[in-house]
Image (tube, rainbow, N blue to C red; front, top):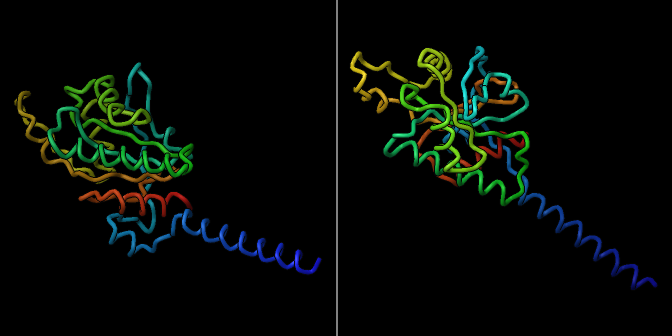
Length: 211
């Protein structure tokens, strides 16, 4: 009986050790502010409040500040006719979502939003369809330029006003290619800066949103 009990205790000990080891491997590590910065995420010491806003997605669905409550939000400013930076960044974000799904990372309180910086040409239906082309869970939104500038300015996104020439869209080439992080209180929490490496993006995102 003593031998059986010892074997059972040893087996139990090995099981506990393996469980703790696996848990350590699968639990995102909390990075320091400096580690986050080195890996591309500038996190504000004190998240910034933002004012109300209102945008529209497909089928007239309104997206406003209340939709940020109780969710971690990654927000990107781009446009459907963007030749290089926007599709590249959106693709990296879609890969991040795929990895998180594969790891069964909790996504119930996470969302991904694409805001059009070309509202004169991107209808809500256009931008939402474009966003969902990268991942079904993306939300694409658009509204008038004054509303866009209001939100973009608060989130430190450079969006130069177009010239009087309605055919001149050169201002779109000057937008800042950052991914904005908003916390579940609807506050501006930080900025993911390019170039976007998937491993670093995944590491920093999980470190912040797992807390």
